[in-house]
Amino acid sequence: MDTITLKIKNKKKLTHLLAFLKDLDFVEVLQNVPDAERIEKAAKTDDFFELAGIWKDSDITAEELRKKAWPSKL
Image 1 (cartoon, rainbow, N blue to C red):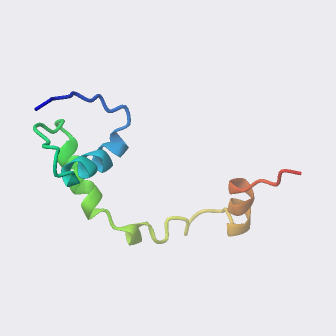
Image 2: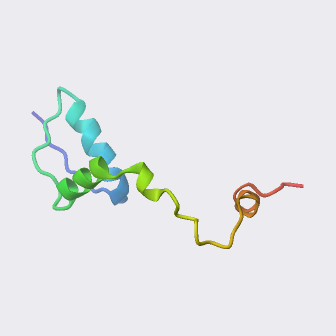
């Protein structure tokens, strides 16, 4: 059996990597980084609908937001 050590540069992607590795039947995750369990738990409990109304008190309109997000290339 071979062992490798990984250094993860982006903590946000750590959850996805751990989930992927755990799904592989030929990989055994021996040790999680200290924040991995907390990050994994947070990813499972995040609710998309908690973001509803995030722009309600903002002065920006949907049209202005679209123009900033997708500027014209003319």
